Length: 253
Image (cartoon, rainbow, N blue to C red; front, side, top):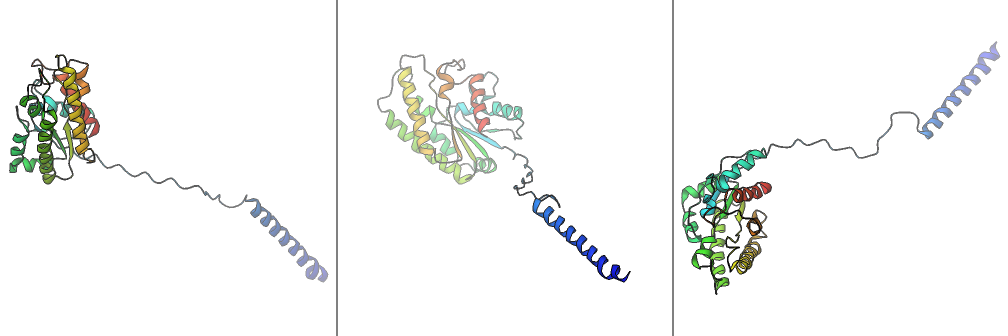
């Protein structure tokens, strides 16, 4: 009996311990014990998206900014309000500071007004339409191409540069949407030449301001080149034309 307790029992316990150690060691090597470890990168927790900022638009410039020719009286401003609502974008009603017949010199005087400067400071979207009356009105481009087109463009562009500088002084961070020109006289004898000048003017604008990430040239020439979207005055856009311009702005807001 003493041999059992002093020899066989310890020997048996040792053999069992060795067997358990060997089983555990083999299981460790096979990796079939313990909780599995995921070495793949963990997916980042979804970051809650902040509500879209309130859009606060202001439009200023000439009769196109004012909305002349729109049979509903909405123009770019009213149709932009509709377009933003349709897209579910939170926006304040657009302040329309457009003036019928305004030229670049008129816009520069308007930008000196403290009230206008305050509206610009409060805005985060500023739509500008200017230059058409300088180019179309100063020369009878309806019937003949001007002989000094480049000189006319240089003077208008210089005043637009000053206007943009004043807008930026009032609000350095706002998005500026500048309305490009279109040719309202496509069907006239000089229509093709005028389209070339319009394209050159739009290219000049893009070349001057294209490096500003907060400046967008809103193309309009293609909207009127193959479709009659003019109003009854045959110069300003009709409702459909204004709606398409407003849509292009809303798509980039």
